[in-house]
Length: 148
Image 1 (cartoon, one colour):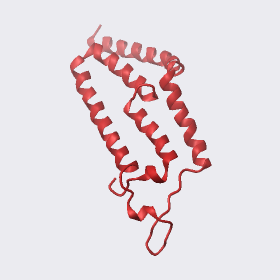
Image 2 (cartoon, rainbow, N blue to C red; image 1 turned 45 degrees about the vertical axis):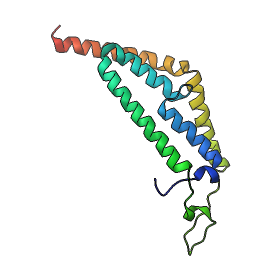
Image 3 (cartoon, helix red, strand yellow; image 1 turned 135 degrees about the horizontal axis):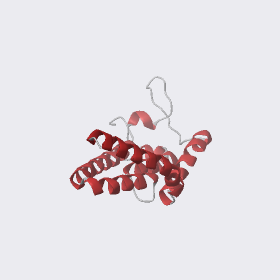
Image 4 (cartoon, rainbow, N blue to C red; image 1 turned 90 degrees about the vertical axis):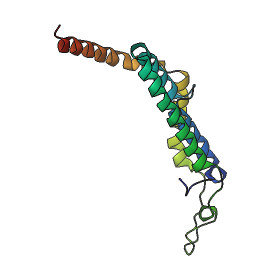
């Protein structure tokens, strides 16, 4: 990560899209990662509060790392070797912001991240039957293991 830094100045659109992805991975409210983390922790808290609290600290450590990585890669000082146009003798690179093809791939993903963060019901509805079957299987397996 030390080789990066300052990409936000050269690639602001890419930085914005990646920030949305980083924040979704952290689980910020309003983004797709939040509802999954919230549902897992709400369910786990009912069964083992201590382990849920311990695992919550893992989320905090992961979020701190993601924010640190975002800061290192996109903000701060741009290394000199990345700041100029291509020069084969000095091996310098010119970085342009993302192009239309890359935007075509990344913008729909960012929209899905936002949509599922605001309205997660379509995915929850899609998973309900599978989750119910899984719960039933685990309950039956537990009863068989206990000799019931």
